Image 1: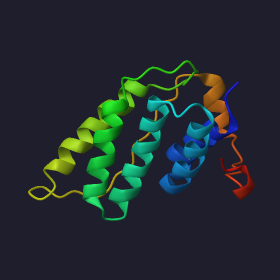
Image 2 (image 1 turned 90 degrees about the vertical axis):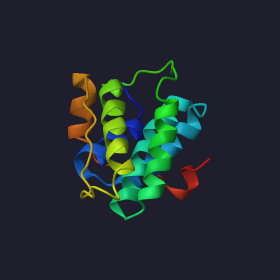
Image 3 (image 1 turned 60 degrees about the vertical axis):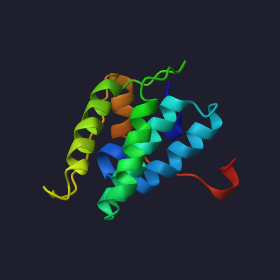
Image 4 (image 1 turned 135 degrees about the horizontal axis):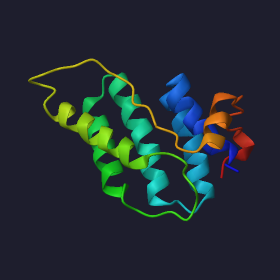
Length: 137
């Protein structure tokens, strides 16, 4: 069984492509689960996409670099996603961002491949509750 906030992270990331809300729910999840570096990397990918979509290329580069630096960290929990594929896509995005001045390109979303059918179903049927102010750590 996956935590509601993690399911919502994937829902906002893959379905809504609302990277700000993605950040909100994953930050809450990350804070409640020992501030694990791998979870932080997932959080930073969403924030990087949020920054680039809003025209902040430099912010996106910094967050993608930070996420990649944490991408090999371990975590005792279950992810149910192809994290390796996601971080490969982030590396490719980062290469393009570093060449942006010579070869600009429009924002495009990334998708997290979900490998666990139970998690996939939970994401597809998700009704997000978000993070209430009183829930914040």
